[in-house]
Image 1 (cartoon, rainbow, N blue to C red):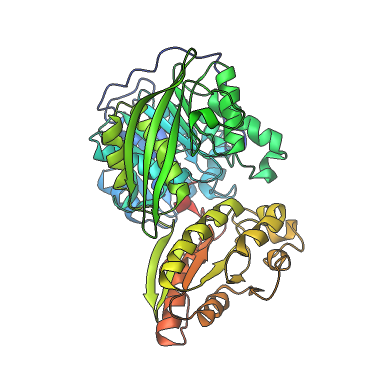
Image 2 (tube, one colour):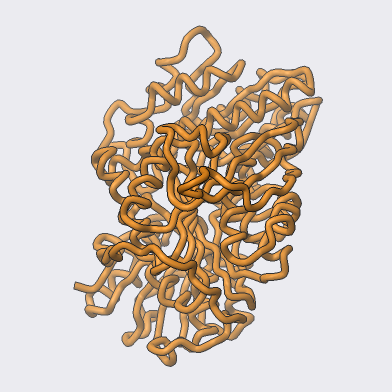
Length: 541
């Protein structure tokens, strides 16, 4: 059977892989043909998505013949056309070359006419992650995984490596603000990518370095049990190239368990956390080293800290081998923790520790991660992608620092993402959101799911679990935006929160605050395409 999104290629775990670190790949790697790819045809459905467009560029640069299509077009799509690739706006069966391997993401619906034609012909269909793994052969692949924190960590790592002179390629699920893009084909040997655990596609990679930010259960509609979810991360660790390095967060119990298991299996492991190495939970050393992050100063728009890398000496305990100051231009402890993981990965890729810390300090955030959308009538509107209870807790902790500095309150417009996630975490969502002074929850963004399969699960499933009168359920999205705007007063911080199209409502809120009544649909984001058109292609999952 050809691998497909429904049947990804099964991983073949490596045996114990201790030993010396992997030497760096020769660079530049991006333009070198790869045996087996030269002349091979690939057709990418949803080619205009940020991550998919980089796969297209990388495949072409390494000798493949590339075509593609996209429902919406956009800057990445136009860039592919400008490079001479045969790309089509819109989906049609006749656009699929019969000899091509067809590449899709999870966002592409099964009734997409191009995908249906390829299956009818018996053409090979592979997931975007599999195509990326093929194209990235010979590069220093860095895969960033975890239930949350992937975009921030991979974005800051890509930006820091670029600042350090490495010009990495990267495919990230959000725009790196300083770079103006979430995808880039570089001339260097490093390739940084988010590794998506939601559909097990992260098991298609064979990285040189893996960063795991946390192993907190999510996507249980796919995995079924917490044990199965955690086992997938063990399998992911075993996808490392021989001699590769797992960088795992010891602040999270799940990723600490992963680190211990991987080290027991003979893999190279470095952990990172707020703990000193001798104070790690469990009281014993893990792997070959540990990064201790010590926060020195917190501010509304910055964080100052010290990073210390220690190696384990069986005779003398932890021995410090590197230390560097970290001055981040963004706030929040969890962002600094992500930087600690990126610092360890950069050192593994050959960047001098002090230079890596300085490069990380220039990181200004990624799109939809605490992203200011504007201010009107003394009210600041921030947009954030948080869609898991832990992410919302971290978001509101950061927001509290900003709100206190302004002398205002925190108001949240939350759009749950997926019926299954809402059902699984309703109690935790309610507890997390109670950290805000006022909350409006709107209808669930269904993505790949259907309301009919989850009777009775709505936004009210969350608000009904919240105490007092701080929360209300307003199903219609525009009315929800107007409701939260009407609750705001000068000094307040209004957050639009969720992984769906709630991001479009910032403009509506600002307009309501600034000029009273606003009408019509918000214009600051594209609406989802219809069935069969690959809705959500730009998200590239």
